[in-house]
Image 1 (cartoon, rainbow, N blue to C red):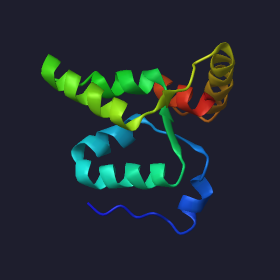
Image 2: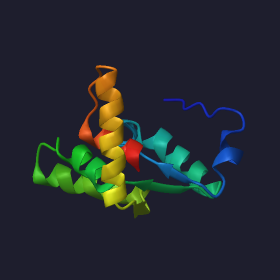
Image 3: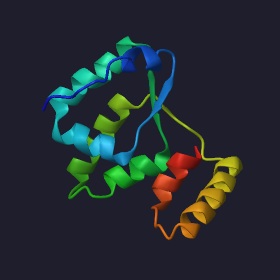
Length: 118
């Protein structure tokens, strides 16, 4: 799988935190070689890869066995260096996002709301 990195993206992420969602980890586990290179590129460009614990839970919940669960957990931990805290302020933001999406008649998962609120 070839991963396209837009021009200027790497300079834009220097010294920044990249908040990773569940889909990143699903794709990464399905295309380990390509994503290993991508993660290395991010780290070489001084980006910090972070997530929230609900993303890890969502990624691991589909594991068909205890062995697969452990493998996926180790893989997740190889990529993420830190978890962002899910604080009261984040939940306040979740409530605001929920109101906005409700007005538009859209449904969003709680994990995606937490990511957006973070």
